[in-house]
Image (cartoon, rainbow, N blue to C red; front, top):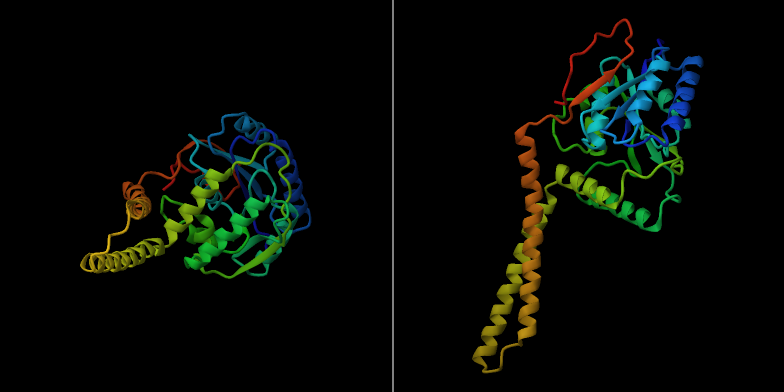
Length: 330
């Protein structure tokens, strides 16, 4: 069987501290796979600079000039992790038989990349990297992550538990993924929808080698909200159910007040009325805000703006690869 050409796609944002370590370890991994006959000698590592403000792009350019294994993309500004990853996947789809995506911090164990490729050679189109445990996370992060996956399950989303964006996609799966044109990307929700034969590879997550996490709590919450609102309308239906329940309670309260009036007993005090008003007012504001999230997503989608814009491309070409025109994300 002909060895597949592999591309490892690595989104980068302000990764100057960890980049040398990431570059060295990934090069060693791909070189070893080539020597052992698992992948083709034209396999690549594609770094995608998502508008970094430090010297990340300069380091990528230096690596490109020194090694034909290294390719690079520079986005015109910071578009976000999911869009940067999609830019790399779209680029790699032009010349790769299979693609592995991994974050630049290498907290995901690269030693299992060989297992990813073996699963691909066995006929799997999608291979998920799944964490065995979460001991390295703080109690808060571990608890909220578990709550997130349970919530997604209740919402009917087919997420792979403890899987982020560490995965292998075959050319067929990648081409199917590129047919999804939405601007609001939540790849760990889209990929399971492809429906191709899949497998899981388990690993232990490591500590970050250097630099700071690019996913603080606000970004994690935003990603969770994107996932929920991009794949489920159950929150809207929940609001409708709460509205019916509130109406029923209000009707019962009105009956109670009417009975009190007829029996000449004094009506309840000011405090209970104010509490009810504040509760209903807060509920209305939350409901309007949630509906606004869906309306905002519709607004973003109908404008049809590009998901990303390329500023610069660094590409070592193989014989069968044709130089692409300057592109924007579709």
